[in-house]
Amino acid sequence: MKSQDETLEDWCRALLQALELEDVEIDVNEVLALAGVAAHSVVRPAAPLTTFIAGFAAGLASGSGQAPDAVSMQAAIGVARKLAQDYASTEASGA
Image (cartoon, rainbow, N blue to C red; front, side, top):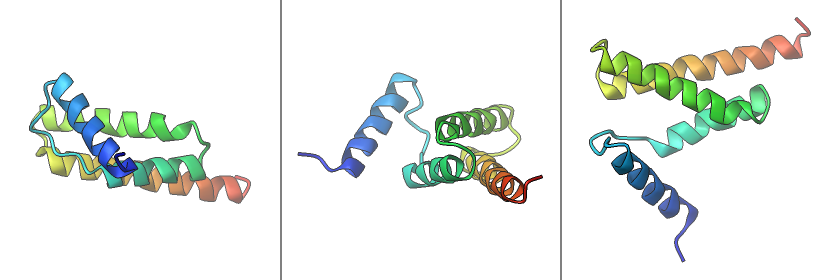
């Protein structure tokens, strides 16, 4: 039986292949960490929404030539993570 990590890596490769994105490198742990921050800082359903929007933004930046794939992904993940953390702080302060 495969571990969860092995299953996620296999799934990621299969999905990238199906979307004809075989050359794209995905840091699964980084994406999952972003999902965790969003889920715990905003609300649980924010996790898939946040990762989708961050990925979409990274794709637009990369596709338009603004930055290479890895830089675009890290930048989008960084913005989303900071926003989710700030959101939690704002909510906690009652603002």
